[in-house]
Length: 77
Image 1 (cartoon, rainbow, N blue to C red):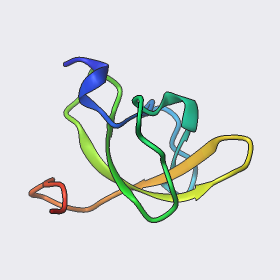
Image 2: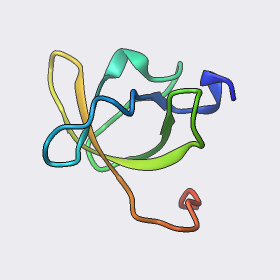
Image 3: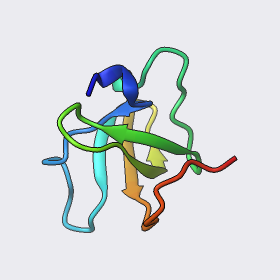
């Protein structure tokens, strides 16, 4: 799987104690703007893509996401 298949690259080893995934806005695919509340297809090129919602984004570019509990794993229309 190519990293271009994801909207936002995340490392599954960067999960905090609350189960949140932490990454940087600069890891977003070109044209993707990770804004709070939006849902993106995320992954690291080694796993099946999954959906996650942006919970927080700082001015410094830190992005905190939460994987969605969605067995269908389908993106919203």
